[in-house]
Length: 299
Image (cartoon, rainbow, N blue to C red; front, side):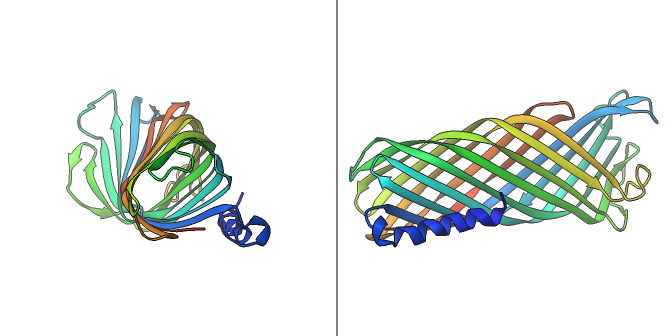
């Protein structure tokens, strides 16, 4: 499914909610800006036949991954709802550290380490069925459980300048090299998710919200392209990694209701992805977390 379809579905909920036949259906539409920091690790191991040694190659990204997130919810009856979220954003002002070790030599000093500028993009979407466990028609809060499906992607691009930190175990501290670098690294994951979502409303205009979601079995794919590795392929070296793993998503917010149909929420949100089984990756981890501010219209 294309990403644009998710946005159309969410806006379709808004149109349906305004039709007379759906006059009793509850609907909410939220937009938030997520000031997220991002971290991505990609580590593989293998054997270097030039050096006749085992090796470990590790890529670490430290980036800003701010996102705009759209949420839509339709509640046809008090105890059941369907909701969907879609987030997209640019990954900017990043640094990628590429470190290689030859494990039959020294494991403490890298054989080679480089740093370079990095940027890219990120998106995710999820669709969920939600069931109200507690607080049906309650003014002081509620507790929901939900189950659904998620898909996400992070796409990174490493570009000039590239600086050596270590080269052949010698510390250089910075040496511009490799002009024309334009390598890409993409990670996709998808799978089912379950979770709980709650709200505590001690007074009519103020509430606390919380969400925890868990995806126990995700299919994860990585695709890398090193455009300067013409020694492997004249057009550059493309490689793929596959695995399975899990993810956690969590959030805590303070919700303010200035008027009946409008609310504003500020809080903290994060998500963590880990690869647990793979023939290619030794480790792979994605983390995004940071503060968000959200506006909500409820009908």
